[in-house]
Amino acid sequence: MEEKRRTIETVEKKIAAFFRENRRMPTYSEMLHILGVRSKSVVHFWINKLLARGLLEKDSRGFLKPTRRSLALPMIGDIAAGFPSPAEEELRDVISFDEYLVTRPGSSFLLTVSGDSMTGAGIMEGDLVIVERDREPRNGDIVIAEVDGEWTIKYFRKEGRNIILEAANPKYKTIRPKSELRLGGVVSAVIRKYHR
Image (spheres, rainbow, N blue to C red):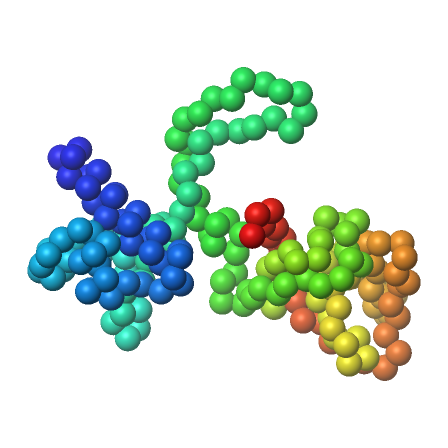
């Protein structure tokens, strides 16, 4: 039983690795090569196993796609950001970054940051930000907004009836819309990849 479970996990990892690398599911012919088998009936067997376990699912058109669970990473412990402490490595949970970072998938989208006006908030050029479209901003939230025809990312502040947008870099002035302000959403997370 344990050996069979490990085999299913191996098949899942191979398909998930192909998906991450190619941004699409492999064809059945490609699965022959990926799984190292000769028969499409063996591929069908493993696909049915993965569907039954909830590791794969079918979209509205009947095409296979990985579930969030199959793209998750193991959470194995904590690490000290202060003084060093002994690391204890044990499997604590499995986390999907989609589920961790995106609380409202139906109304969220990604943007790539350009410029340095938000470096004081830890948002650097090239970072990705996750934006929630339908969230009402509060003072101190980071928002994306169209100001007088141009889009920007800034801190949201409300002063009475007036809305101002503030940078997190002192070399940029506070923005006070002259004629038009349209809020595009509230930033809920920042993603930075150190090695590209």
